Amino acid sequence: MWARLAPLLREAGCEVYTPSLTGIGERVHLATAETDLSTHIHDVLNTLRYEALTDIVLVGHSYGGMVVTGVADQAPERVATLVYLDAFVPQNNQALADLLSAEARAAMLSGSDWRIAPRTPQMQGMTDPEEIAWIAERRGFQPRKTFTQPLSVAGRYRGPRVYVYSGGYAPSSFTRFAANARSDSAWAYHELPTHHYPQVSMPRETAVLLLKYA
Image (cartoon, rainbow, N blue to C red; front, top):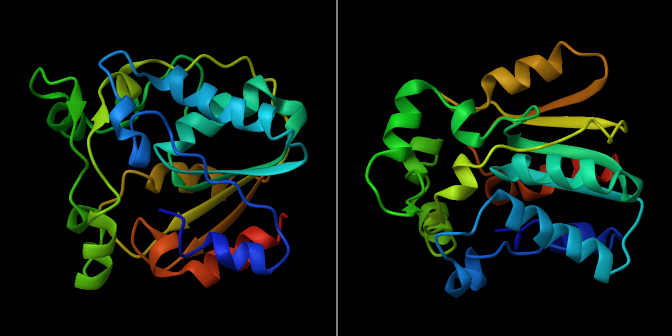
């Protein structure tokens, strides 16, 4: 998912890690019905621990906003800046499902399968056939509990927060989070005129924004 963006950051001299979460991407074979949000938070915490990473810019895209919020709360001493890239911004005791509209929540959680299919690229503003084909090879089902487990945070992270809003499509599940960040002086705020995947459609522009905080 980060294959177009990460090389640009590395060319600029950054050390970049893009850990895949359990049950997703090349780790899809590890998915089980018990894989939840806590699993994914620990995936990233362990990357920080075993790679001995500190003073990092921690970026979460989409659902990843849930993950990085939990990571920053548990390891605030390692995080210099927290970036939400068209992402959910949860509060304590909220699950991702709680942050959706009633209609979207009902559609997501309908049925009894422990796996949930991703929204179509078209529903997320994508129109370019080449981009859609590229991303289709990199998306798949996600364990239900990653969407339904509430996040537990204690407010330990008090560092800088950045919101990057993809303002080139509607409706968007992220408009209200962007509006909150834009109106809060404690946040840095940016917009990119593209769909939900700026790291795919505008990797260079996204890299320029992230490098402001590196």
